[in-house]
Length: 361
Figure (cartoon, rainbow, N blue to C red):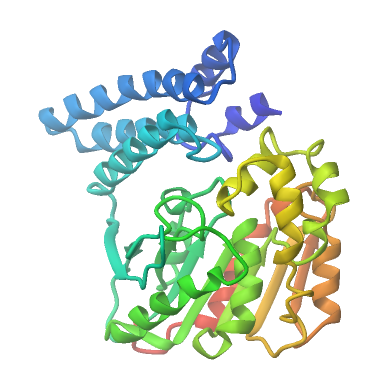
């Protein structure tokens, strides 16, 4: 499976070259986390050096391309999450490379920090990546998050920006630079983010949406209920809500499409360390047990593959049976429901809810 994905540069092989991946994987003699990080980081260093040389020579195109390659390999070096010293180092390098590449984007990334009321052991800042298209007047804004292995650096928002919608890439709790781990009440991360957006005159607080993928889809479902008055719409793509947290499903998912360390990576995002700790803790995250699903919610679109082996499609069937009526589009596909038409369907739905008013462009 990894060869097919690497050949076309899809998750998690964006900005990587198939021949490089083939060489690394063929020669990798251990899946030790720091060995993995060091091996992919060595490839990244080659492209980083090429980018720096191109930058010095004034070749913006080559600098951009090679910084993105370097980002891709450092990103893979920390994949799926930053649960070792080597992976943490690689993550910081991936950030550096992406922001360097961003200097050559038509719409560069603005790194923003939002104050956060820290609790014991947490951080006091939320770091996010803002991109703002040209346009007069207040713009709509879409907050975009990935899941346990897709951090704010990894979400690609060019096609949202093309529609005149600003984007704010945000780490979900427990990943990247998030100042708190996942928990039963980690949705409080979104309160200062939404307050910050509302305080910026550039954005229309009545036209703010959220698009969460995978574990970010879990966040999407929850804040569609808990923060419904601050959100015009929410997309949950490949997310979960209840059945995904049962021991039987967790065990089954270990043998599904996710490449490796699924339960370990989920555990890490929620402040746990082992498979057994994740199985014991996970039921507390059920939005059904928490009494969330029968509460009113903002307008919500559910998207996934019918054959998802990471999170069960039954969770979305449950969501359709509870609370405020929701929209849904399911595909004959696996996790996230990726097909040639999936992204366009989601973007059309978001645009119709956040469409810039006449005169905003």
